[in-house]
Length: 112
Length: 113
Image 1 (cartoon, helix red, strand yellow):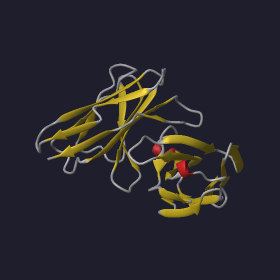
Image 2 (cartoon, rainbow over the protein chains, first blue to last red):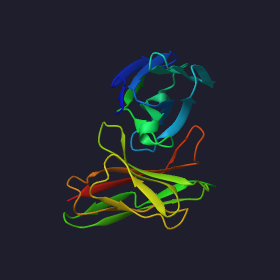
Image 3 (cartoon, one colour):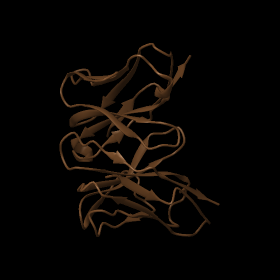
C-alpha cells in the first residue's frame, strides 16, 4: 500500500518562508503533486514533480528526491491568504497511474 | 468559462435514504473522480472513471455507486448501505496521462440526520 506523512500544522509569519515536508512510501512511484485547500473550499493544484529537483511557480516551489522518497513545498513571501491546508499526493502504479493518493494535509497558519 | 460544478452545495438526508450528488464538467476531460473528505483529513478516493461507460472502485467504494453515461457527467449515489455518510464530497476531473492535474468542483456537504 501507500503511505504519506506530512506535518499536521505549521505556523509562520507574514513575509517569511515556510517549508512543508512530505515523505512517502509506495511501490511504483510516478510523481508527487501539491494541492492547496482553503477552509470549505475546493482543492486547487499547485505543483507537480515527476523528476528529481526543484520546480518553481511564482512564490511557490516544490522539490522531489526520489531516492529519499521525500518532497517539500516551499512558500516564499508569505501572505495572509496563504493560510490554508496543503496536501501532498502521489501518483503510483498501484493506484493506477492516473489516480492520486492524498496525504492528510498540513494546516498552515500565517500570522501578522 | 470551463469548469466543474457540483450540486447541491448542502444536502441533508434521513438515515436509510439514498441520495444522488451531481457532478458536471465542461472541460472535455476524459477522467473523473469522486472523493470523500472528513474533518481534518485528506481526500479518499471513492470511485473513478477514465472513460465513458467505464468506472472503477477506489479505496472506499462500499455503500456508494456511480454511473458514467456521458463524458460530462459523473453522478454519485450514496446508498443506505453507507454506514457513516456525513462528509464533504468532492468531484474532480482531469485529462488522462501527463501530470494528472485534477480540477475540483466546489463540493457537496452531506449531513445525515
